[in-house]
Image (cartoon, rainbow, N blue to C red; front, side):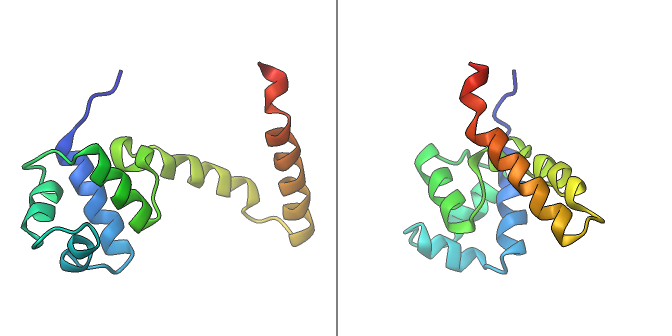
Length: 110
C-alpha cells in the first residue's frame, strides 16, 4: 500500500506546472486562491493538497491524479512509447489498431 506523501505530491505538481510553462501565480489564480502562498505551501510539502484542489490542478495541468499522487503514469507512458520507437508509420498504425482492439475487448477478461 502506498501512502500520501505531501512533499512528493507538491514536487510533482511543481514539476508539471513548470513543464507547462505556468507560473505559481497563474495556477493560483486558476484555483481561485487569493495569492500564490497557498500553492507555494502545497508545492513545498508544507501542507497537503485537498482532494478537490488536486483534481482541479490535474485538469488545469492536463495531468492525471495518479501521476500527481504516485508518480506512476509517466512510467506507463514511457513504456508504451518504447513499443512505437523506431517503427515505421505503417507499423505504428498497425500497433494502434491492435491496442484499440485489445482495449475494446478488455471486458472479456472479467
